[in-house]
Image 1 (cartoon, protein in one colour):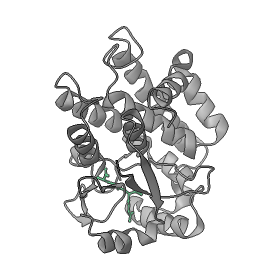
Image 2: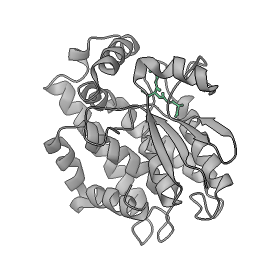
Image 3: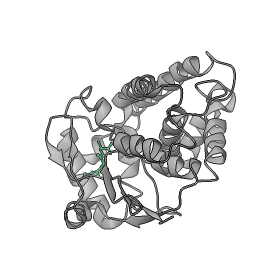
Image 4: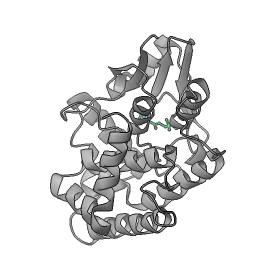
Length: 264
Ligand SMILES: N[C@@H](CCC(=O)N[C@@H](CS)C(=O)NCC(=O)O)C(=O)O
């Protein structure tokens, strides 16, 4: 089997990946106002590839190089919330089939259809999982600007410059005003905590560590991707706080998903 290629954006962090900036796949775009970027915890692809045991390598592309590089390889654009189209990552190239897939949700669907052996959308759950991912993102969306602010601090210089400039336009404010310490930051924390409290209520509906009880699915990959993103971009003490909520549930879920996905 030939190695799949995942195009991803590097960071200064060890291992480079940070995934998840807040951008989200097509299925939730329509729920967002253009002023707010959506959430795409990209680790989802790493997790999905790892879960299925597919060999892959990452080609790192700095943010300002995404459009020229994607044009060069012939990748498609993503549709944004406002209907505009833009070259974005992640993009997956599969030399086994010749497929070149843009957009997180499309990548997840492609992987499950092409490599069905260990399904991530079993029991005809795709529609429900899509609704779940939208719901989770919408809970977090109003606080996304806080991790976005932190993400600007972990990118390599060229990407950081591009990211700050484009996100300042997107949010119509200076980066220093994204999540200033004090009441604004506290509000962001309260939103994040509420989002995870609601998620916990969804998770405890079934017995077992996964959202679907004993059945591992893309829903868990997605939740873990959000957690992975937070764990990468936030400061250590900030991530520790989230990891410890609800008796350590979120730190444990991330560790469990990583294990399930062969250590990815
Ligand atoms: N709907 C796409 C959105 C992906 C997305 O927005 N990616 C951002 C990551 S920062 C991107 O590549 N942005 C390019 C840019 O800002 O120019 C998906 O879910 O894959």
